Image 1 (tube, rainbow, N blue to C red):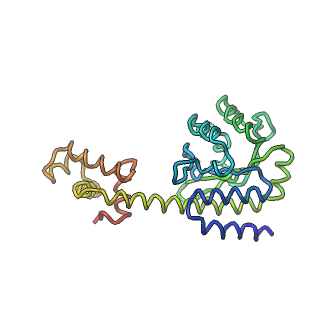
Image 2 (cartoon, rainbow, N blue to C red):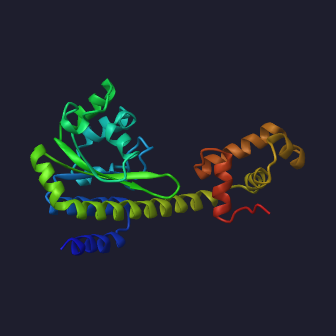
Image 3 (tube, helix red, strand yellow):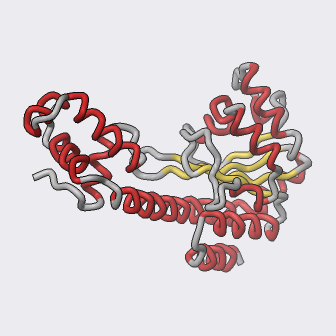
Length: 257
């Protein structure tokens, strides 16, 4: 029965064309397993929540209110969430209560901000089971399964821990693949707008040249080179010039050698 549930989820997940569709499927299976709702974060280092293609929060269609999601993101609660921090040091699923004075938080010195973050959960649930998902390269995501009544949470965790573990790992893997594909599409679309001069500047950066050196090679000022590189980074949505070079190389726009 466990394998059938997880297998059906993976089959549906494989045909989910977007993160929003995958999120709706996760919510469907969450309800089928007796949980009130589910939530996820593909990368625990991120404070922003996943958005659908229309700009809406993915979690809205998973049963979360817009006000709750805006409070989480606008007030950057992820920075102080003890659940997120525990994911970084736990390999196994763990059950936690939204009450900071509960047994699940004994032995942890929660500061005021962490306690306030847990209190924010109490508007919608008494607690959850969270499944950390660690991937190569040090990236960690997680899926949380929420409900009311601490005793019921423990029973449900006991009865569904195999399903929640398998589904959580399958979901994060699919979310990774969907995000990677979306980034590549966006980068390719942006790459089509790069000018020959911007590509030329990126090519010289890939060869280790500074703005001043590139300016001498191209017969342009350092400021002009800086301007072209800035435009290239913006178009490729790169965080810095090394990131822009990596994107350009991945897309085959420039070569290192």
